[in-house]
Length: 319
Image 1: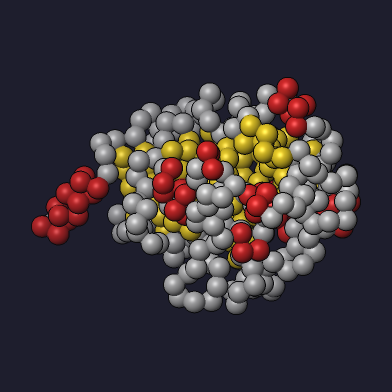
Image 2: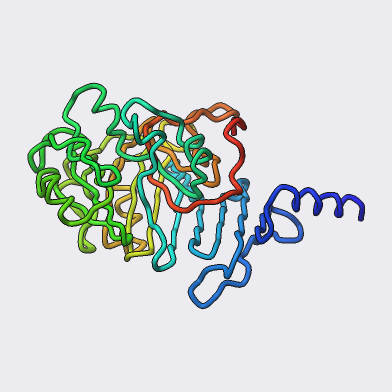
């Protein structure tokens, strides 16, 4: 009894009033969401459930609901993460979150640390455009928080990978995908975008797979990250581990087809390889190597994230 009381006291000290954090335990093995309102969210407070052993993570607040599953197959060996995200009407959907907006290109951080610094609930790595800016290579049409970073891009269906297709994010939570040169930076701004990411190719548009791109680009075996939208307010973040013993990785078609299975009407391929990452409540979920103590993915200037919470651990905590 004393042990239970001590644990309850520790929880009350660790988390603010109205917050509930449920770890895997005999009292709540399933980690099911508490009672949600008719809109699918909490009336107040926050709920967090983490079961890394079984690959299940959940979060809920009055404006956000997240459910993450780690999936796997044995033949071939693959491990990937499916994060389903619901945002309340009028709340902020996915957006690019910078480490330092004033020094965007050169101010970089590991994704999990950036999430902790900004209190971001769920995030994946982005387009890694900051490196292309620093290297003075073709960057693509890149916009952050309404500011044009770059306008130089490739022609449609360039032989280069990434081909610098674009993902446009709007203030109302809408997402649209475009060929690399389909719109100018000025046209994006006139349309009211908040952020434009350049990587690609786009995977799904109007509910149809981009078969031409899937047959042309990204066929190597690697880690992959993709983002999809079912409709405004309903999204998927997906990350495939790769080049490690438990997961060989795959080409871009792998996650494209997963997004189609989830009825996404929009899908976009983000930077893979050592950049690829998925972070929940300040913890990197994916493995980057075969060691017991996992390495972080590459540092970057920003992450594609959703939600804000005061429950994230301090930045100084390594994992």
